[in-house]
Length: 87
Image 1 (cartoon, rainbow, N blue to C red):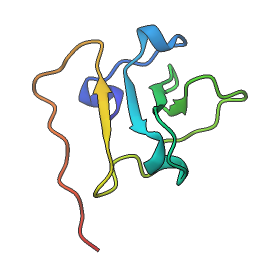
Image 2: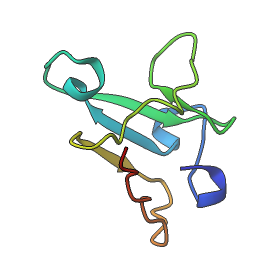
Image 3: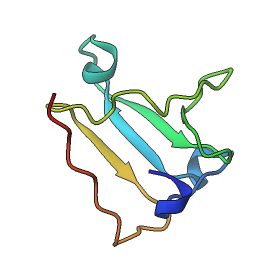
Image 4: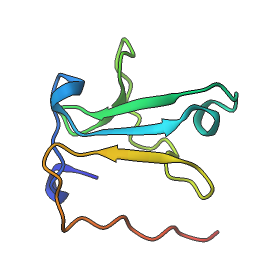
């Protein structure tokens, strides 16, 4: 999920592509809601509102059995999520 694959980064979460991960999957604590991530203008994924911003590009947001949804500014119809890798 990079610029090269058609995703949009921005300083503002409202103008960037975003991923919202179910909070119980990312924090281990079951609380209602989602943890929002956005693509920054530098091409790294960061948590929305986290100061200072930390590169979260390696966070396991799409681990098997977890819930997340993508909000794309450009709605690239050619992007397909890669298949999960089995251990």
